[in-house]
Length: 245
Image 1 (cartoon, rainbow, N blue to C red):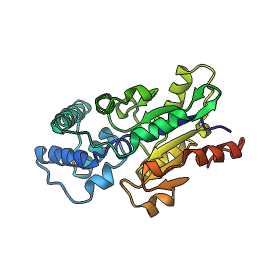
Image 2 (spheres, helix red, strand yellow; image 1 turned 90 degrees about the horizontal axis):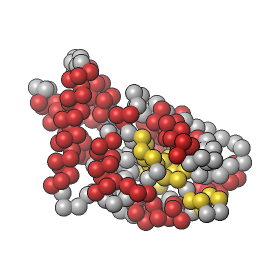
Image 3 (cartoon, rainbow, N blue to C red; image 1 turned 120 degrees about the vertical axis):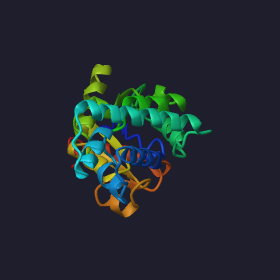
């Protein structure tokens, strides 16, 4: 078995913006005449799409919203997110990200063929593209699967399975299988989603403590730059046809 693709989560892996999202969600609650409560964002939103986050959060408060109104809330938050980033002098990308991407692109799968790189996120596409384009790294990601393109959020595996499907559509002859991918996640929901899709996963301790991720992920690192992709490739090559559980 060969490692052919690396699938990145977005919030908490590429960009350090969880606090921004928490503030924006709290602002929505205030505008809905609801008082934010400690721990709610972590419980209902971390690693999950805005759709699921807002739906569950409002339902928990006894509010049932229509699909139309939910879309309005999501778009309101997206606009506020864009405005917030535009005010920043520098995007809060995680240190070492570009060096790590370069390292991945330099690793060959077959002769003349490098690892494929994609994003699988609960964030909506406009937010993902805004950051990737602003950081001038969009060109490195072959596929983006965003939260507004799937109905099920992490920890469901749908986003990861769709990424595999799209990579196969884009690269004829790739014949990519989930067990030939590596996911990079920072949340428990994300790790569960990848593993349910049959994908090995690295937990990066950007959001949760190292020891919590270590219990669920196949590999765990403090920082993305600590991941030795050469060793991971060796493990995949030694697996032969055995799928990572």
